[in-house]
Length: 338
Image (cartoon, rainbow, N blue to C red; front, top):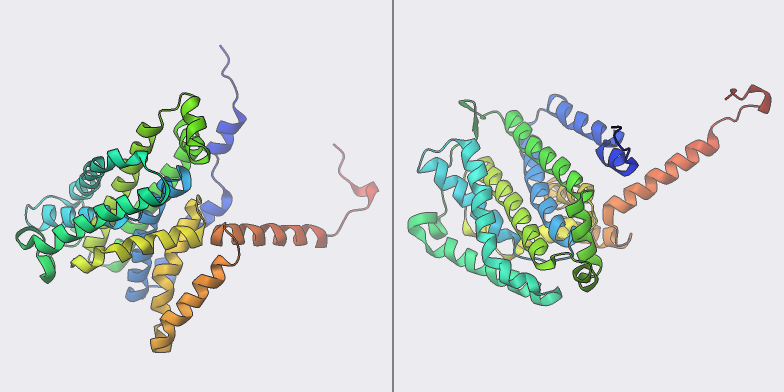
């Protein structure tokens, strides 16, 4: 029996050359720029991009506006801190446990998946506030306003990642796995189904798609990924405070997705780089850095709804077109024979 050929499957399986170049650059980067502070900032960007890619599943893929991702981010961070610092659980298990705890907590939000638009956003905001108040008031478990200290470094194969370069590789490695996993989901049957829900939920339901179930699955996936990001953050900074997981953290993740490009995984990474990295490198201008940062965000949004991902894609197409126009054309007699 001959196997059928599916061109769309072949395209989904192919990896874009630019993606391979970016991955190669990220591997080489610590050897080119070994500065510890720079590697720490890059690690924070990688962690933020994981949380932003999780929100892309909700907002970009299924069209669900959530401003409660900070709750799952915090649940993952404190779960990993508690498992490693107080129970002595190895970091790899704590990482998975953090994602699982956030995913289980997201099941509490299944009833609100029937809501849409601003109603859904307000409901997720309420959940985020509840988690924040729990973290702040339950001092016996989270340390409360004093914070959670004594979080150990991430440890793999019995080796503590004390060098920022190895911590950077850990965070970027997890971000890379999340990126390629979501890239596969985007072109899968599940991805097409949730995209249909985003375009028209009623039409998707009439087509036999189980809308509520798929929306709930998107919440679980996004929460699990946010929990992973929270775990990595806890072991990167090694100190947690309730103010790290307020409503504004959810807004920050949302800004990453919007300015990077809703529905674009690469856009989520670009947005994280801008929101997390840019303010740090604007510290040289002192108190004016946030003013300049805000102006840059506004200017970015003026480029269109596609965000930075669409902007770079447009620039790439224009550069390719100019290169093709400027390339010398061979005389008709010198054309290669087919």
